[in-house]
Image (tube, rainbow over all chains, first blue to last red; front, top):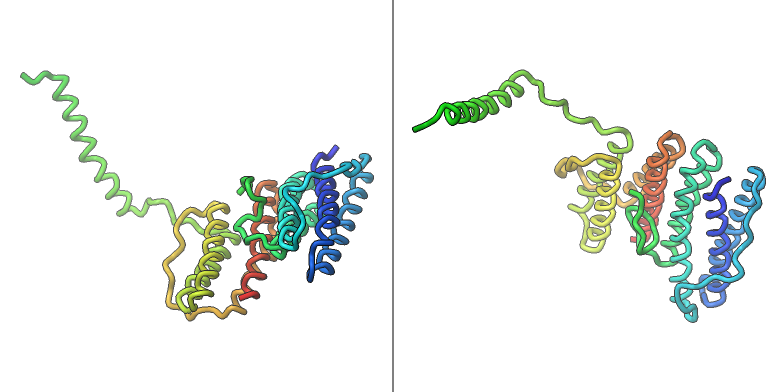
Length: 140
Length: 146
């Protein structure tokens, strides 16, 4: 059983939820948010497919998610999306190690780390030597 | 009165004091010092990026210089994480690269890190290279925004 795959799936659920909450508060960035949300749905489906292929039951999304702060303004919406994207990186990094002997999955996780870092940056996160969420220590 | 035990201790210390410089000297003369380390491909690439940024900083205006310095420092952090703890060579006299050349170098570096992350048998190194690739992808965006 791969806890890393389930954790990555849970991260995608959380991201999709956050984009749903933030999307309506964004003014000029709604199309970009919608496109990125669609990418997270594709990623969610990919992770579900791998779990099923491994004989596991994909976990369902949580009934609700606690947001790190209010989402009433475009700035707060962008901050939420930057936070959510960076919070995906630790679970994807774990997936790289977990799927070391699965080249396709490993390459997928490596690519998703880059996409999450870029998406986080596009929503206002500061560039980092090791892109990682605030308050947590990267493995480097 | 000086006892025999004290004399032996002084003699031993004196011999050691004489022997130590002699040992160092012999090592230098015989060329037995450990050979200088050779950076691996990932480390060499980070060293080249640091050199490129050092040259770029020297020829940049204030705003670009601040941005270049931050990116240069992140490459120095990558280099340390990759296990290279020696200081990078001092800046040379090479002509400063253009911003477009830095973008190309960052893209090349990102591909090299991504490839390394996908090929290594070492799980921790795969994770590290994946994070460095992500950082270098961010560098491309930062440079393109200057």
